[in-house]
Amino acid sequence: MDELHQEFVELIALLQTAEDSELPRLLQAMQTHLQHHFAEEDGWMLSTSFPAARLPYRRACSRAQVRGRSP
Image 1 (cartoon, rainbow, N blue to C red):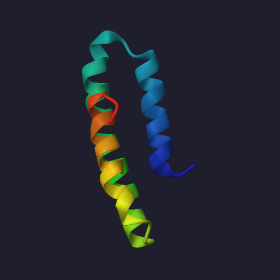
Image 2 (image 1 turned 180 degrees about the horizontal axis):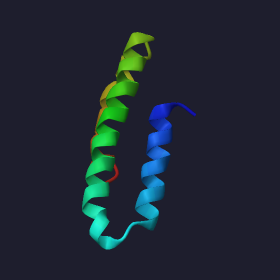
Image 3 (image 1 turned 90 degrees about the vertical axis):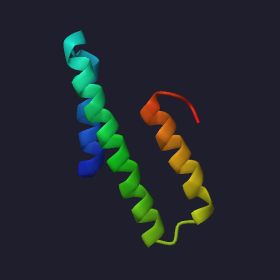
Image 4 (image 1 turned 135 degrees about the horizontal axis):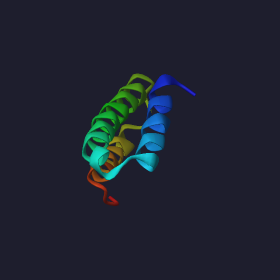
């Protein structure tokens, strides 16, 4: 597992056991992580000529996930 996905797993584990008072900080950390995570993956896809037609869908999905909704 790469570092980006390891950080995601660690944040999920923290969220699962967090006290209510810790949730705002952890949710902000998750939002920041997801924004970076999807931007990184978009960059990888562009650099490897991944079909660009899927990028708008991924961006919509990542924005929705950060907001806690489905696309």
